[in-house]
Image (cartoon, rainbow, N blue to C red):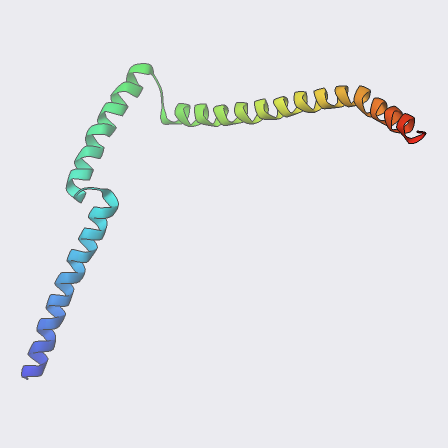
Length: 109
């Protein structure tokens, strides 16, 4: 009977340690206690909602704005690459024939 009591006591202590370990891991992940993080998130959510309402923005407006930003960035990047390749081809139209002519001229020497 004493052995069972000790193992139950150990299980109780082990359960207590597991709860503390879980809470400390959660606290480490969140950066503060869960209750304080929830309160901070509520305050920041209220302030952001207030500002968004003042500007007439919705969450979908923000999402579409971010999406449009990345699409424009993507298109701008390919436009820049297109211009860059165009300059290379334009220069190559002069440089490559000149290189070939110079190689032929130097080959005869």
